[in-house]
Image 1 (cartoon, rainbow, N blue to C red):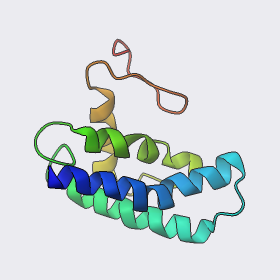
Image 2 (cartoon, rainbow, N blue to C red):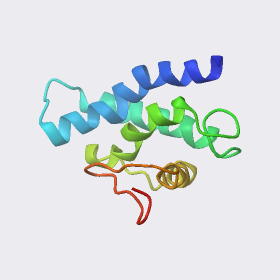
Image 3 (cartoon, rainbow, N blue to C red):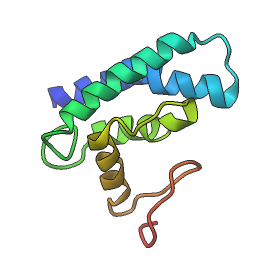
Image 4 (cartoon, rainbow, N blue to C red):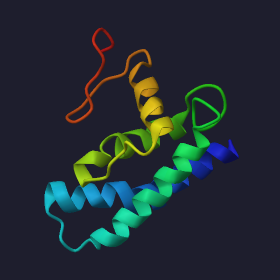
Length: 117
């Protein structure tokens, strides 16, 4: 439980300040955002995620949790903020695993896999 809460806190902090802020800057024109700082924060948290996911399929434990659900959309939509995900192969694999979950529903920018919606 503590690890899940930690990832929820990271989502509200580093993920919001990194990938989400970069997306707001580029996609929605929120110019009050320091894009250099947002890009640095995105790289930092994506490195952490990639490392975490290098030895396990999910952020906490052996099954998906609310931690995965909370982090997922911001990270999956990071390219909207000109954040390249290709240096993070474990993150990319995790994104695909989330999309394969039963009942996954896509949204603009995150397509559901055929037969999964």
